[in-house]
Length: 73
Image (cartoon, rainbow, N blue to C red; front, side, top):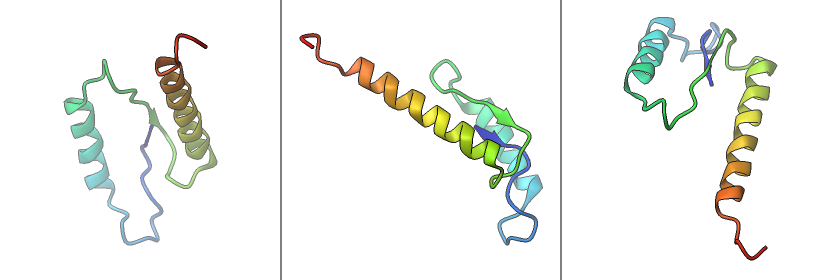
């Protein structure tokens, strides 16, 4: 998940132009058949961004467990 609003304006790493260039480079260069990519209209500290990150991590863990499960179980 990509937080389109970036970080907090009061912090030193806030740089919207660099964020936009980075997000565009990701979309251009990622193999989207292998990587889930979703843009969210929030900043990095938004609870919705955290919820989405946890949701995606949970999906990845469950998928990994299914793929690696012993067939004898």
